[in-house]
Image (tube, rainbow, N blue to C red; front, side, top):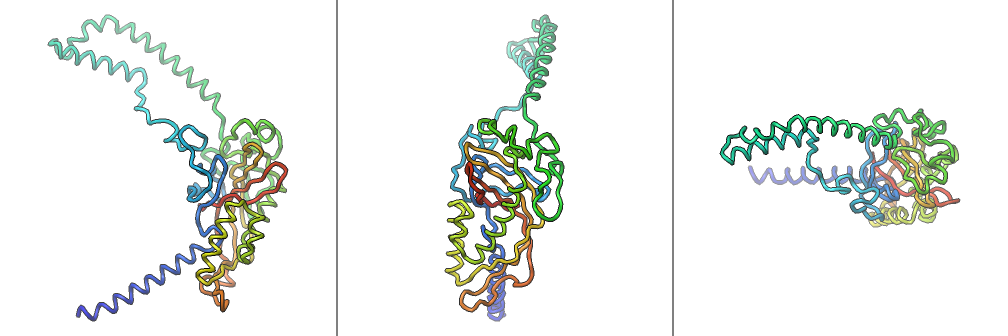
Length: 338
């Protein structure tokens, strides 16, 4: 009985392995292979602001040439910027602790728990006045601090950062325009001030316009189809050297397996700007895009389909970051999954 079961169990394991291999092959299709690659400047390890197209937070960067920031540097995780502080008990918490301490001291001196409060009661009225003054000062500090903090466009409300519809990337209004953000112009944070001031997260700080959206849509199409043609020269001209090296690794892996990942009929269905900012002489723009494409893998020798469908399009939602030098054109700098 036991010997008869072994062949069946072995066949089942082989079939499961084949299914898992097929799934892995499907997941690994497209440039980036469903990973999180590249650099977003000082914001490489910060999550892009959510949008209507990608309302969920983008996955963190897995591979990047940018070093992780240390504590205190822009982009460092909140938990790395400063050590965890003890719970803030406030002024009245400290007062209660003092009373408790006085009681304990009195008990240790033989006067009982409340014995140590006899002398303390004479100044209780004075402490209550100090508590009142301290509370007023605390409220004043919080009021002025809240006035000095910048408002983040669309915070807590991704749908409030600009209209969105099907078709090309939104060209009518960039995120932040409806809520006082600096969008659609070259002034404010999009001008000289952006070179020294950090643009708040989720805001268009450089004035992204229709020509930029057209460039993003064109890059999406040309990078995908160039990858499908295994056109390494085209990929190098459309991406940063870092991203070109990642794509070259993927193409080499396909060649080692004897397959080619064909990509055709790329169409942008929906997209919107997450954030745009300037670092020195470099502009960055992070865009969420939902697009369709015909994505399939063929045998390199016989051109027979080994995964996917030649005729059936699939959809994907990704967050792409583009960068450009002063006076230059946009190139792809990073890809993140949602």
